[in-house]
Amino acid sequence: MKALTISSKGQIAIPKEIRDFLNIKEGDRLVYKVDRGRIVLEPVVSIPRSQSYFWTPEIQEKVKKADEHFKAGNFKTHKIDKFIKELKE
Image (tube, rainbow, N blue to C red):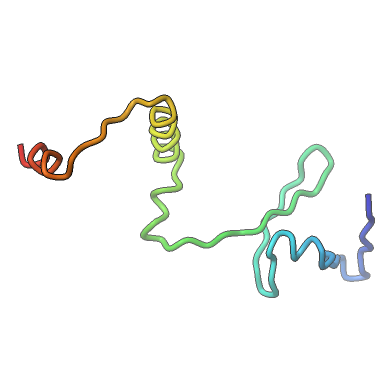
């Protein structure tokens, strides 16, 4: 385990190998939390407000269930003409 040094202003430098691995660039934002005596840092990923609904817990649960159904083979395949006809009905 490698150690970081805290400056007189309470700052730390994130080593280059970690920044490169996590693709953290100058100006990026991180969120932090204290968890069982540890400081956890996590990069913030910005998404357009118009797409934020997709990341709500309700939508993520629906996506998870759909993925489970797909992996279990619970889906239909359609010929495009028949599919369009069914959509119109």
